[in-house]
Amino acid sequence: MSEYKTPNFSIDLSGQIALVTGASSGLGYRFSKVLASCGAKVAISARRKEKLESLAEEIKATGGECMVVPIDMTDRKSIKSAVDTVSKEMGTIDTLVNNAGIPDAQWAIKQSEELIDNVMETNLTGPYILSCEVARKLIEEKKPGRMVNIASVAAFNTTPQSAASLYSITKKAVVRMTEALAVEWSKSYINVNAIAPGAFSSEMLDGMIERVGDFSQVFPRKRICTPEQMDSTLLFLVSPSSECVTGTCIKIDDGQGPR
Image (cartoon, rainbow, N blue to C red; front, side, top):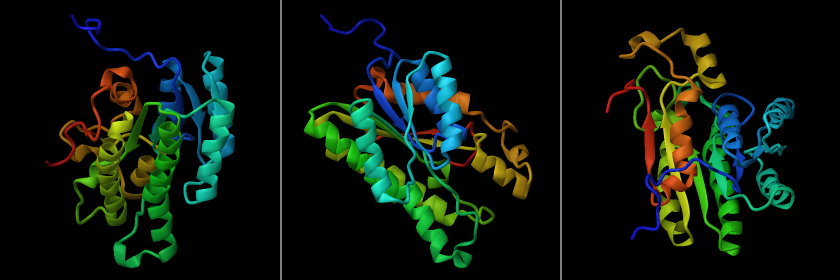
């Protein structure tokens, strides 16, 4: 007889300790509130501490548990220090949402080395180091975990007009990082998955629309999606419901792009 209830589905995150990067705005802001509303203790991180404090107040006002832990994803000491701080104050991080990311918004041949380093560190190197720091503690303590890396449909498609080659390269690397770490850590019951959003309203996308104009009319559904429409996918990947799902990248693009 099966040990599982019917249906075997739950978004109860009680007891989970989550760290969300890039939480000061956009998707990360929404992700943090969603995780807290489902019972997780949430550590929110970004470089802009004042915006994190505002989010923390919102979460606590609705009964959630939250702490602010600033992280600079280009600073490796900052990343390691944040993991130690959360571990000491909340407990071992078992749910990680690697959401922090920045665009390049410049043609490849015109990019400065400073921009290249910043995009690479923020979008790829920082998340890789953070994932390893979190996994190291879980493996030492023999605890399972969930990681969700935020990639982008730009990992699978670029256009001659996009001026986002480096961003696309880093997001493709995030997808491969997801697949590789899922294999390495599967024996430790750490699930590593990714979400590849299309055009979702965020500070980054809103800035792009300001620069180039509203491009939503070229999409089949002629709209920009909202962060709330990603709730169910995030919750599936961080909840007990996705126990056997690891190494997967789920595209959420509203049919916007080519396949």
